[in-house]
Length: 250
Image 1 (spheres, rainbow, N blue to C red):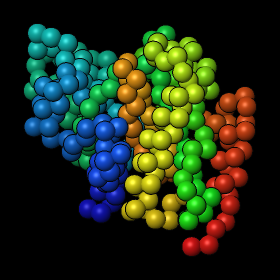
Image 2 (tube, rainbow, N blue to C red):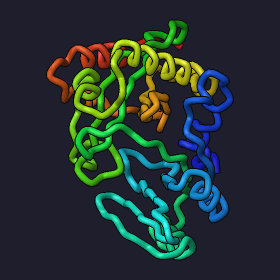
Image 3 (cartoon, one colour):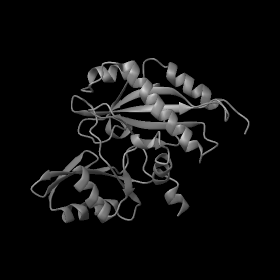
Image 4 (cartoon, rainbow, N blue to C red):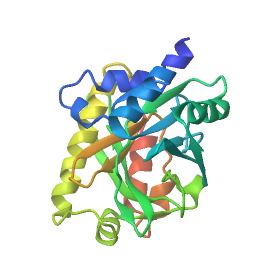
């Protein structure tokens, strides 16, 4: 049971304990029929995510489209079903016995018709020094995918400036946006470290909705760094690697 709860569900519950972080965390619950119904009723859509999923694996999106019809997105596939129970049975067959969560949807900005998220790396140089953001980039999902993971969807990595300029995000002050994202990520890292006291790096997938609200989509304990290696400017990648390699005393 510890292995089940020491994943996304645990990190979610830790983050919502913080008054600074909670307003930026998407509402999440354990996947049950009741919670599935509640989220569809409240939001008109719901994301279903494996508690131990990584790199966009196993994510499902269900969207109510009217007249008791629902669209189900899984990987690059889209299926339309009639009836909420039939739709539930369909996704439950995909999920099987795996421990899943339901998550509030967020309307992510688009580049063309491809979704866009921010990947943020927070680090600290020692166990007593403060957390800082050492990397920030934009992940662009592949055509037709509901996830931005580049390995799974065949998407792209852009600088923040490139991503915002190419997107429909209504932002004029990119510097201020980056500062606001950094503040949310650092506050989340500080909160998580109350439980994971020996961690020195976290990765956060961040979404910004059409109203400019910043949302933590996911907190990653062992984030991939290859996104930053894909950028033409390798300075962020080199800094992240340098701090990560630094040996510090407990």
